[in-house]
Every structure is written in structure tokens, then in C-alpha cells.
Image 1 (cartoon, rainbow, N blue to C red):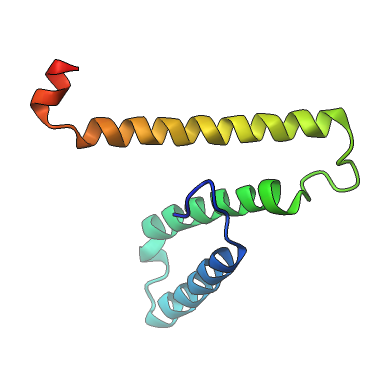
Image 2 (image 1 turned 45 degrees about the vertical axis):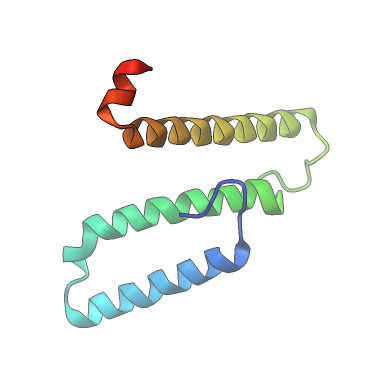
Length: 106
């Protein structure tokens, strides 16, 4: 998944097209429904990327209302939530990557 700091529209477009190709190929092979667990994960990842793209890059979540204080507050909340998720991810990976003796010391 893309870094939350860098939302790359070109990469998102490529990922969407790759997903579309994979769906067509799975259907042609007759295994589309068997791939449901993997597709659900991919859909979730892409959904997150698309949401970030809409909020961070395009600003189209609130068309025509960009100057409203409510919109600024909503964008601040989204940015804070994304930052908190990133910090949680970093902490989780830090804990998972620790050696067992490091965990006991810290």
C-alpha cells in the first residue's frame, strides 16, 4: 500500500487498472468467487487510497464548500486521523520487529 504521506494518482490509477484486469482474468478462469478473500483485502486497500486521494489531493469531498469552517474542521479531523493511524502502524511494526530481550528491557 502507498505511503500515507504520498498519495500518487498515477499509482492509484495503475492499481485500479491492475485490479480490473485481475477481475476479468479470474472470471475467464472461472475462479472469481474463489478469490473473494484476496479481492476483499485489495478492495479495502484501494478504498483507503481513493479516500486519501479525494481528501488530500482533489479536495472534492466537499465541492463548492471549501471555504466553510466546517469543511476545514472536517479536513483537519481526517488529517489527524490519518496521522494517528500512521503513528499506530509505526508503533505496531516497531513492537513486532523487536527482539524478545528488547521487549523485556523497554
